[in-house]
Every structure is written in C-alpha cells, then in structure tokens.
Length: 109
Image (tube, rainbow, N blue to C red; front, side, top):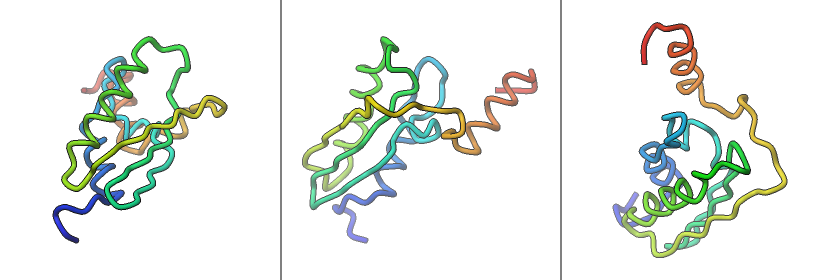
C-alpha cells in the first residue's frame, strides 16, 4: 500500500490515538465511529456519540478531524453525526471492556 494513500486501517489507527477525555478511551475503542468511507483523498466518517448532550462532543469531533486530516494522502474529512442511533456499551472494543473492568475492580488502569 502506497504511503500516501488513505485506508480504513490508517484512519482507525489514527483514531486509536484520539481520546474521549471523559472516559479516557480512544474513540476507536469506544465504537463511536460507525463507518469510514474513502474516495481518493476524501474521508467521510459516520459518528455516533456516546451521549448526544455531552458538552465534549464538539471537542471530540475536532480531535477526530485533526487525527484523520493528518494522515498522508487525506485531503478532506467529513464527519456525519448520527443523531438517530443510540450508543450502547456493546459497541466497546474488547480492549476497552477489559480496561473498564480492571478500573472498576480496582486492579489497574
């Protein structure tokens, strides 16, 4: 794969570094990124925030944008917010579930 070509893996890897500051998990691990579409250098994401009313949502969206636009080959980023769906804990990655269980049990971070 050419270094200047955007791929879904590159996008999700970048989003692994983008955190929801309230819970400390990456947006990738939280499962809030519901889809990634790539056409050339244009990336379109569908995002379902964990809480529709969280005051951090604009900050999280900006972090998503910043992480994706920094990928070599990405020329534009469009974020579509899903306002109809509902986030559920089942959307968490296995890594996120494990981290939350350890924190709640007092066995680590």
